[in-house]
Amino acid sequence: MNNSTSTLKLLEVFQKQFPNFGTNKSREIFRLINEISKIEKVPFNTILNLLEPTNYQTIKKALLQRRYPKTFHKNSLNAYYLPKYEIDLYKKAGILQKKFYPKNIYYEKDATNNELFTKTKTLFKNAAFKEISCLKDFTKENSFTLTDYNNRCDNLLLVKEKYDFFKKCPCSQNVVNCGYSIVNLGLGCIYDCSYCFLQGYQNVHGIIIPYNIDDYLVDDKIVASTKGFFNYTRIGSGEFTDSLIFDDITNFSKKIINYFKHKKNIYFEFKTPLIQERLFAAKKCALAGFSTAFHFDPVIYYDGWKQGYKETIDMIFDIVPNASIKWISIGTLRMPTTQKTVIENRFPQTDILNGELLLGKDFKLRYDSNLRIEIYKYLAQYIKSKKSKAIIYLCMENSNIWKAVFNS
Ligand code: SF4
Image (cartoon, helix red, strand yellow):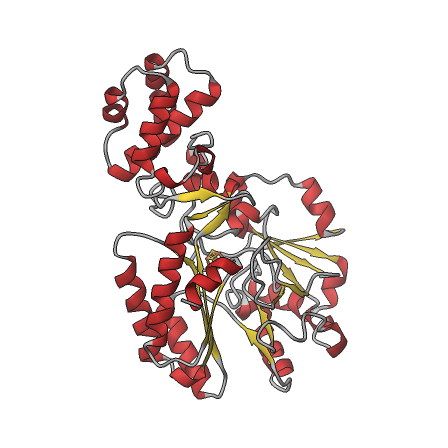
């Protein structure tokens, strides 16, 4: 029985027990039972059978209290986001690709004069090369659903970036902006991190790589903030893709390093996965005279989180020369509401949604502020205990949280 069928069967059982609940009441109660069943590893029917046939409000409160034991008494019922629980097997994340080899390469006409096009011709001889008029038309003609996300690596798009190469980090409403700028080295990734925001954000049937990076590596195009929060310009890649995952195809890192190495007070960051390799690569960079920075984002709350993050911090300071570390940012798990159902469909076994994520005024889900403060303080203090001179800052947090973490 696949997940979709089993969800329907559970719904049938549920509706037999509560035939008078309308759509919304059923949705909320059904979801709560499913979430509790997953977190406590107790069968759905066991929880259902224990429910007294009292009224909906009483049942909902009892279930919320069981699902959100730490925050239930501190929040209004509106803080709990209870969308329809509907698992579709076809949306489940596919097997991680070890090597990127697209079946189709779509390119805009001008791309054929570019070295990146020539390189893809050499690297992907078996791919079908197809000219497109522009990315906008391609997306219009190829509708995209979450199920298609699993096949994103079948297609590579070589397009001209016209506007959005360097820009200020979009950040979030009502938070302290850290002055970060971002660069668009592409969109899409071959990895499948369960928390990745791209799975709910990407709406294009493929991996996009801009072929005209040279157009932007000129002084007057570096329009992003010249004086950021830390009085330096910090430009990060890795927002919409892993910074280095396609570098064997693009060679962007060489061009970028050659350009930025002569710029004073501009720091360009490459962000990339797999912790061990990353730390040893950072060590090599530090020994070659580069600065390093680390971003703990998203920090996930789970049983044993202190020990887990302590070991990660130990690993960083054991491997990477302390003096090279300029910044360390920390941001706890947060997401737009729509991301919750995306994650539970793509990663039905993941535990990252088990935490008590509350609905904010900005329609984002995040942990309760007390828990966030506890996490930030713990991590910041442990990093400082390493005699680190790195600037520690919070990602997408409001000023009250900053004050509670750093001024108390
Ligand atoms: S490596 Fe980064 S971009 Fe790729 S899936 Fe993971 S979080 Fe997303």
